[in-house]
Length: 117
Image (cartoon, rainbow, N blue to C red; front, top):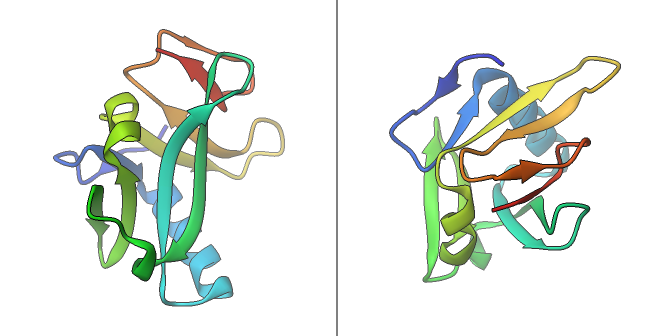
């Protein structure tokens, strides 16, 4: 894993993840932010979710993290499970994609996309 940026924030991101997200955002539209959260499901009980959305969908109970002008938002309930999360990205052929390092996870499934806390 590469060095995480903005270590004082509740959700941290590596330079690789930020760079890839900015490239994806540019392809989809410039007025987007990233929503990160959790939902019930997955092989370990809870799964990570993330998707682009407009800042107009920002709720009053959302936490907002700024990375060089790129906003990451997370609802407060999900934040209970994600505080301290490091989001990384790898373009490796095997095991590539976004990777979640969650200090709150008791167990993580083999694919790394779900966890239990």
